[in-house]
Structures are given as C-alpha cells and as structure tokens.
Image (cartoon, rainbow, N blue to C red):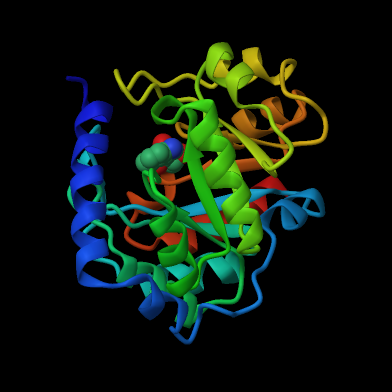
Length: 260
Ligand SMILES: O=P(O)(O)OC[C@@H](O)[C@@H](O)c1c[nH]c2ccccc12
C-alpha cells in the first residue's frame, strides 16, 4: 500500500466513527452552518498575486514543519499579508491538523478558507460548513468520476467552492465537469512525494478556460510564480515555504511584497 492508500483507508474508518459520534442534524444546527460563504475562485480571478497560504504542522513527506505557532497567529498574519485565501489541513493522523484548527482560523479572519482534507463522504461536506470553511478540496486520485460528481454537486448546493486536484492527464480527463470551480494541479506526487512545477506546466493546456487554474505544492520562489503565470495559473498554493519559518505570516508578507 502506498501512503495515499493508507491515508484513505484510515479516513473511511475515521468518517464512520465521526458519524456515530456527531449526528448530521447537530452539524446542520451549528451556528456557522448557514453563514454566507466567500468564494475563493472569485477572489483569485480578481487578484494580482493569487496566493493561497496553508497552515500545515507536519506531513508524511517532511515530518515536522512547525509545531510551535498558533493557528490564529498564522491566520491573522496571512490575512495581513493580503493572501487570497487560507488552506487549513484538518487531517489529524498524517498532518497534525483538526477541525478545531478550522474553527479557530474562522474565528480570526474573514477571507475564504479551504478545508484541506481527504474528502470521501458527503458527511465531511456538512462538517466543512459547520466548522466555517468556504471551499473544499476533492482529490481525483482517490475518487471515481461518479464520486467527484456527487460530492461536487452536493458542495455547490451547500454554497461551497470546489477545488479539484489532479496530478496527471488521466485524472484531469476523468474529472472535468461543470460543478467544479477551480482545477488544482498538485506538483507533488502523493504516492512518491516527488515534486516538480513542470507537472503544472505540462497540464495547463489541457485545462478548459472556464476553470480557475491553481498550481499546488513545492512553490518557494517568486520566479516559479512568474513562470507559472505564463501558463495561465491564477492561484498558487503555498505551505511549507511559509510554515517552516518562525513567523509564517511575516514570511508571507515579505513574499507578497516581492511578488507585486
Ligand atoms: O507545502 P507545499 O509544498 O507548499 O504544498 C502545499 C499544498 O499544496 C500541499 O500541502 C497539498 C496539496 N494537495 C494536498 C492534498 C492533501 C494534503 C496536502 C496537500
């Protein structure tokens, strides 16, 4: 089993446990459930920088990245930097995140929040709303076309934006459908951890113009972004490059100033 298979096998068990602990009506009755969501896709369309900054404590590829900073400080720092949105890892076992991180980020900032999670069940979309996020990630490598369709259509009913993530042409071709808002190309192969922004460059011409293009992972320089902009990318998802520093918000501020 590769790491992605392991994560997803654990996720199926975790979601069943969560369902048995917190019933759907409780999620639907939570204070944030009917909050008006903010579109990340629109924010990216109107932005000159397009940075989506991530909160990530650790990862299977890097182990510890940053266990010291508070998610509230990171969120307010990112907001001050003028990022378009923030991505919050909520997987606990492999990334050290939680739904509480999402709630704390939401309590600190107004910008669009992406719940970074391995989504396999509609129940997780109800959770996403209840904990205050605006956007979900769907990963083509772990979902069938039918699953992508039903999850993305359900997300749209809940007024959530959908970012669909692919890593190769086959995943892209199986996934194109109108219920997606953004197409993200992950420069990191989640099975081998190899990273190269060439993956984004190669796939860009195959992505229809109606989707906002996002390049994800392994981005650490202004040059890389300028280069990807030539391939029509509007969004850039950056985690480690900010999180590995003592003050992720401050490093985002510095980065965005250079980009402008
Ligand atoms: O830390 P990086 O290399 O800047 O990458 C951020 C983000 O793209 C990465 O965390 C990510 C992309 N897709 C994912 C899916 C699940 C978990 C994590 C991810």
